[in-house]
Image (cartoon, rainbow, N blue to C red; front, side):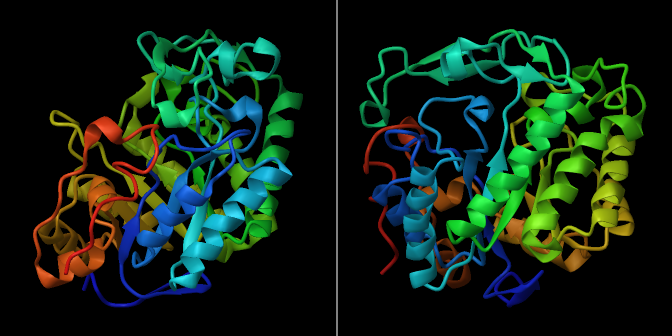
Length: 366
């Protein structure tokens, strides 16, 4: 089943294999996608769908050095190199739109301002990557530092960020992307509104669960109004506690979030399952409940093997499966899986920053 075609929204996919977003920190000057990035994505165009690494919707939305943006003319042109290269090899690619919220540092913010969030809450021990000496991505050398203390967004500013997401979606279409995915997971800004322990607001964007889901609804509606419902997905991470985002009742919260996304009519929900060794297990009953409340496509990612992927498809609670790290070292991953070939192991020391080594130099199977 993994190798059968699939129709997603307005797109026909050749198989059910997704390359999920993976930050690789190789953007050029001005946070512009480069020709090297185009080569990297084109090598992996045999995926049924590629979701790009997170691309910040504004300078304020950046949380790590050397990540690409999608808010300037130069950035749009850089991403056009990527989408043209992927399409030339018959691939499909969505842009993941990203605002990190509090997971940033004053060194990355406009005029050295404080990062913004739903609330003025510091996530102790949550670190971000900065380039204090401005050596650039090719040097591959930077520093992990505690994220800076955030300030709470005003209601007017929230409306401005909703419009930033909508403009980023327009830019993504101009850059040639087939659609967009909203990053609402892993402790970044949208997640900082959703999760109860990251949101201490007492206005219309905090307190009750419907209020905490308001920002998700508004962003999704605004972006769907730009790209169309058939070209928008949303990434959620219901049980992870990454970047200090914790919810007191995650199953109830994320079933409610799925209902919101069903009402908006997004093409898919991309579920990021926790993938560290002692991570919380996502019960099958929870996955079945998501299927009941959400009528669109469901993508799951998180340490999937071929056997786990086929089982998930057979059980019916998944439609597409994301393979993250395996795509790094196996650019022809769909062919390797279909032929039962062994998989190469990626060089973790070259995940972030650097040039072509550990990025575009992995071989394809003979």
